[in-house]
Image 1 (cartoon, rainbow, N blue to C red):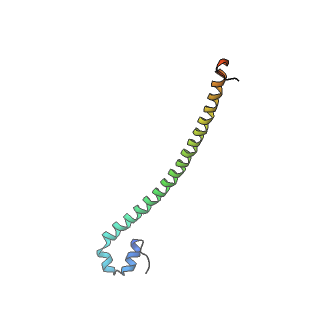
Image 2: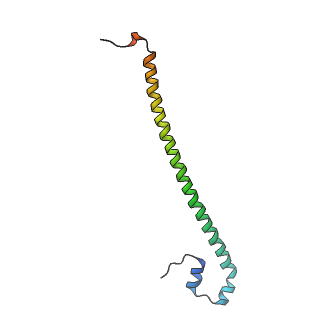
Image 3: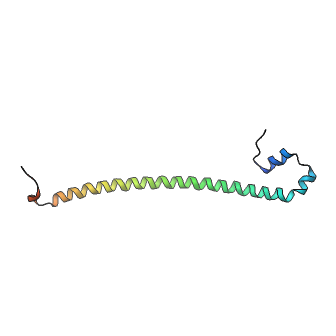
Length: 93
C-alpha cells in the first residue's frame, strides 16, 4: 500500500467522485492550505535548527577560547606574584 502524505494522495486513494469532491471542496481547500502552512513551518524550523546549531558551535568555540585565555592569565598572574614576592619569603637551603 502506498504511503499517503498529502491531501492529493488521500483523494486519489479514496477514489472520490467528482460530486464527492464538489461536496468536500471547502474541506479539501482548507486541508491544502494547512498542508502548505505545515510545509512552510517545517522549512522554517529546519532553517532555525541549522542556525541554532551554527550559533551553538560558535558559543562552544568562544567558551574554549575564554577557557584558554583564563588559563594563560592564571599562569601570568602566578609569574607576576613570584616576581613581586620579597626575596626573604623564598625558601632556600
